[in-house]
Image 1 (cartoon, helix red, strand yellow):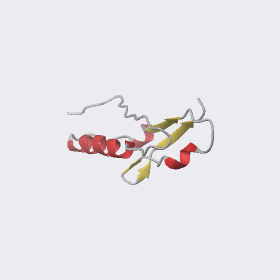
Image 2 (cartoon, rainbow, N blue to C red):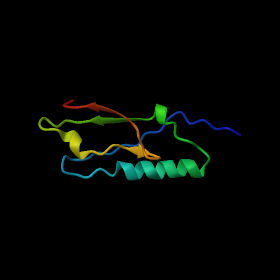
Image 3 (cartoon, rainbow, N blue to C red):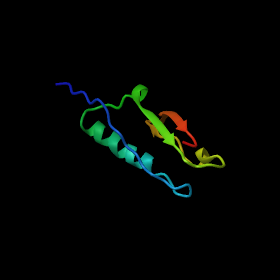
Amino acid sequence: MYMYVDGCTIFEICDRKGISGIQESFDIAARWAGQNDMKINLENSKEIIISFVQYGNFRRTIPNIKIDGMDIAQFTMPNC
């Protein structure tokens, strides 16, 4: 039997002094997928960062999301 999942979203809201916990959430989802004989397609996975910060470089405090040691593709939308 084969199953197909079209999409999934994991998100968090952080203030500029907060620490991101998104990697931990992604690890939980990836572990669940593996336990249920599903695989996350890295080519179709994207990380989108939306920021309303009006100054400085907010990106330095947000680490890349990884799966199996590989970075997920990243898009940043600063100063929305």
